[in-house]
Length: 327
Ligand code: PBG
Image 1 (cartoon, helix red, strand yellow):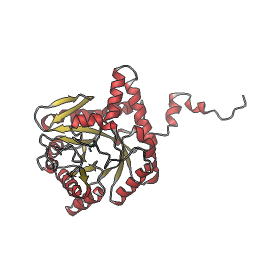
Image 2 (cartoon, rainbow, N blue to C red; image 1 turned 90 degrees about the vertical axis):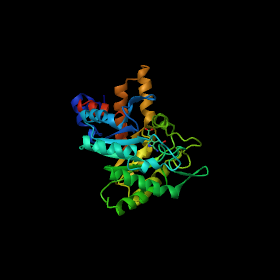
Image 3 (cartoon, rainbow, N blue to C red; image 1 turned 90 degrees about the horizontal axis):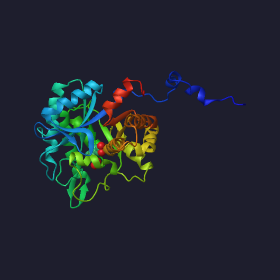
């Protein structure tokens, strides 16, 4: 055979395959999303997300302990309040669910790194991510609310805030407010490139945050658009974002790859609830091998450019990395 180049040489055995890997993953880049809710003695499985739980503050330690044992030290907190109103006022209440959870979690597990999702949809009676004026989510009057929410999270102990609302100008509003209050060193992880996606379905079930009327297409991005992702990324950088996120992950790897190439900050990808639930359902039906799918989804997201990966499979992935199955 007249063949000089043989790609199979580098696939001959496990050792050489590992040596030539282009993508390396480590558990220090994983973030685990976790739901905390008002109430007592609650540790309930989320029906649409088997294996994921909603915890009340008194039971949250169990979830955090499992995380620590698995070797994951970053958590993203989502709050589910008992009371909702038009203004989402529980979101910035110093005794709101996220604020109480943060204080307790920091006391029990001071070595974990706490990021909070900053948004209004879980806290508003109408379920939209900002203040409603008529049937429209009003951009500019929402900015002050988001800044207030961010400050209250940081005051309660958040190490980083992550606005997910998709209002224009919110990164600047949050940065300016935090700086004014002396929190110069608290980074902002911006959900910069967030699409209006059906993949959030199970999350809205988990957090009770589906909009009671309309949808989120007036503020979240249209999934027909790729270049617009760069516009959103550039804007958030100008406004002071420290880390940019693309969300969802799997159907948006093209966008992720663009954002990685065109910017010089760390890029995060969020493998959202629908991605999780689809894997769980298909595996339960025996159609796919769950562990292999988790690994492949994760590595392909890193390969496309993710530096940081948010996933409900963070604990499982940390295990696979430690076993050397991926990494
Ligand atoms: C809040 C928020 C959502 C998610 C993260 N932050 C829901 C939404 O925008 O509707 C989705 C996360 C997931 O699906 O796992 N705005």
